[in-house]
Length: 262
Image 1 (cartoon, rainbow, N blue to C red):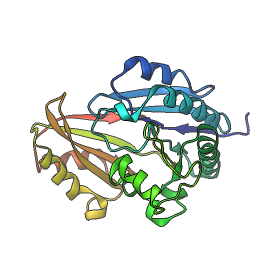
Image 2 (image 1 turned 135 degrees about the vertical axis):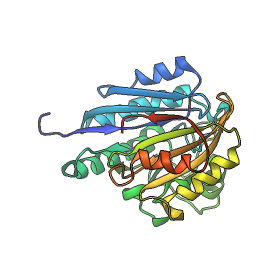
Image 3 (image 1 turned 180 degrees about the vertical axis):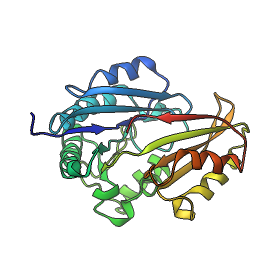
């Protein structure tokens, strides 16, 4: 045990409204300790932060993933966050470079077991992507689950693990190993989602925006506002203060929100 590094995981579950289901899922990750649960009804999503030793973390993700499939059916999903699976993403997070190899190994173990034991197609993304077009999650999520299923059925996409087709209720799971990132949301005063989408498009790294920034614009009907939702992959290079300033120069900001711990 002492020789196995402590790793984190940040499974994203496509359920943000059913508190009983979320609480049941959160109790289902075996020996992995649940550090945080962040649920959002508008997003239709819960982000959990787990910690466990190498070996125990993959076990926990499989056990938790089984609970997710029992409690979450995408045919009844409500929420605006892009997704392709009930257990939508399951990144393994390393806190230092010395743990990167262990995290990659744990992610591959978890991916193989989710595909084999739970019968869910698994796509590797980020630094574990086996296809360069799978590096960014957005490419895999294009068209949502319906689009992913169509591309799989047409032979355009093949999962790295698990069955060659995706069930309508369970979908697929995306797995990687990565360093910590910051998931950060800014609610705007306006409810005009096109304003949020324009700002997100301008601030993405892929469009010439700050380094390491991924962004989408969303409408949050329960809150009555639009939101710019960020993943900041290098928060030491691009600070949250810079993003608040950049968004504030384009639209009035009502509130800020951090999501998860890793």
